[in-house]
Image 1: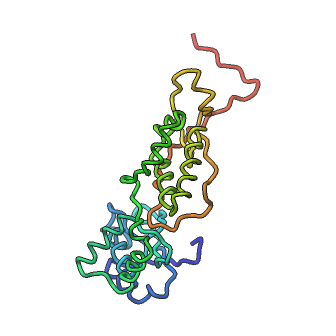
Image 2: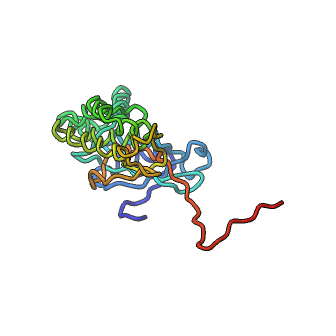
Image 3: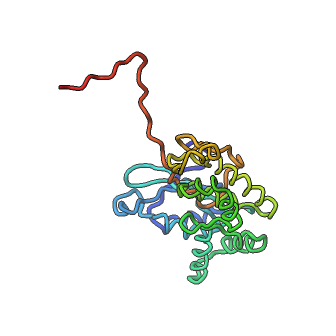
Length: 257
């Protein structure tokens, strides 16, 4: 393991619930082994991600990164929620269901109450499928033709990256500054994450304004601070194909007659 967080494998959902009841208050977190959907019957555990997340939220824990183990299972990081950790709308909905089922425990209820008290509950962020940038950002993009063209071809990963960064800003002034930076970034043909797709130039007059290279250039990071959210940005970025460089002095092959 690359960090101090221990690996944990339990046989089933009941085993995970038992472990949390005994260790949730003192543990810094675990890399929990989970069964892939297609291998629940044959994996080292029958515990699925959905089951693990339910129990974690009941105890005031959150889910984090995931990584591969083998063809049957994978590891997912779970850890106690902090006073500043953000909430996803998905998990807000899950907590509502757990409340109705009478499954929420004191630690989980305390985490919800703290989020409601400081505004994190109301600021819950959407997942990549439902995320929509603020209207003021979309209006600013439409006002700059070069930026609008670039935004039209952005990958879902890059669109969500912009949504995420704007959503985390708490003040109007901070959001306005970030919107201006993103519009300038798009107008230069830059992106948060590398991607291959780029706008089609309508005519030669567009070229000086866009100044877009063959592949969109990643923009400088807005912030080096990594989010501690439950859901990471979707990894859907397009990768550019590698090109083979011709050796100097090589001659083209003659066509066969």
